[in-house]
Length: 326
Ligand code: SF4
Figure (tube, rainbow, N blue to C red):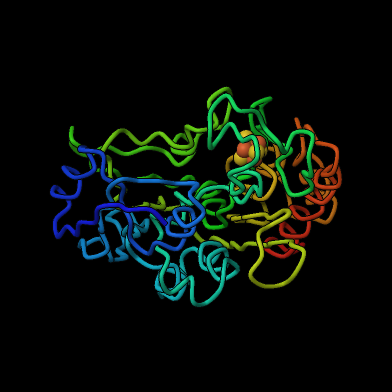
């Protein structure tokens, strides 16, 4: 570890002011402290936001859900409204990390967590994300767990969050407070694909603070759930995952929200799958034909070609679990 300054703030505007001056926000610290120990990250000033009043889950006027940025993963997963309105969010959280980490890590921190690419965390390896212009050791290295969608010649790392996949499927919005006031960003615009600048991972402006994630009201009844496929059944990141939410009325799929994890440089929305589902009667053949589109556009690397087929099977299985064959 190396020397750094630490300050704790008690108000959101005080936090934004410290962030505007270059401070780095820290709450649960479950990712950032690791990265600082490994010297992957070297912030000069940490701004402790853990006591800000951003720890509530509320139902919005329109019937959606607003989850404060400092709600912990465990609190969000166990919250009765999250469990009943959006089980896909609870399940994604409960399948993440370990119980100890979920008790510390916050929703805001979770969606800001950085990739688990081993080369990113090895400061002796070439990594455009950590050190722009240095190259990408994963492109021709061991890339079994890397992305097949949304990649570029500069970076092929996956985004590691599970709950971000659920938020992407549900078309959530990120609420921000910055030096210029409040704004909201659709989740799909919040996290950035690597392109030529993989070091730019999100659309936050200098000093901006995540205050909440809002899930919109969706047609009811809504069945939803999250399936995660990984090398072992606990404390492991996804090889593939699927977040699915379906509104079926009158024997027909009226709304479908589907996204995948473990395969994209950002949580990967699957509009082609959604389109195939809408207006159709649930059936085994519908699930299979929709899931067949899940890996459209995939660009496998040397060691992760299996992910394209695994992704299709993951999506098909989760469509069957959530939608049945009514
Ligand atoms: Fe770095 Fe991205 Fe390449 Fe991993 S995949 S080494 S994070 S540039």
